Length: 244
Image 1 (tube, helix red, strand yellow):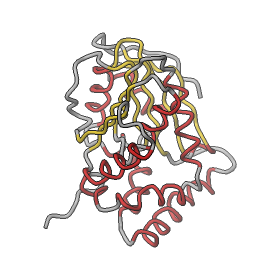
Image 2 (tube, rainbow, N blue to C red):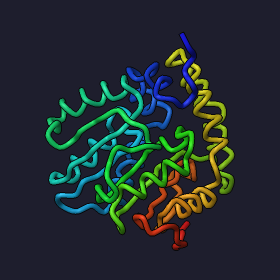
Image 3 (tube, helix red, strand yellow):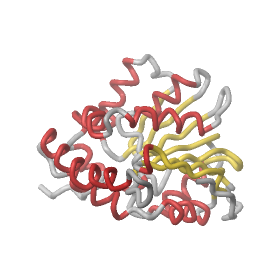
């Protein structure tokens, strides 16, 4: 039996049954408010089609569908077990006619160019081996002018509370995760957050991938960042305004 690559779908298969509970405990429930901000930032209208990459157990996809009753949501994730949990949640919420969860790779999406009105990815871009390619795919499948939102954890480097936030990420998260799950996956979480680009650097990467930045918002003392951009379609990169 081969060992799962850290950040791969197989790794998340191993923790799928306890992923939601661990997220709530480790984030102290704040992850739900972060998702609500992401849904609002998508700025979708009635009848929109929205793509949720790294959908996992479907939290964000469900929240989009519940907030916008006329929208169709497609969630894509490489983890079979996470999707299984997510489909159960979709059925429980009676959203099966508007929310579709499917297995797939963010680096090679099976959708036509401009086939979505908006797209998002929450806590997943860190795990995409080729981030630039994943971002380009998002820009490709979203119509020009459509919103693209990336919600991602980060290590805050400034602010009076940043030392406490870094302590939580570096020490509390991996230990609490390992204790509750009996797995080493949450050590990977801390390491991947530490290795992630600085917010301004990642925003520049989004622009290089064919998006125009709208805002960059630091949430909860900088522990999480919400990147909001617009797709340029096949028009290529352009510099926009990044608002801290």
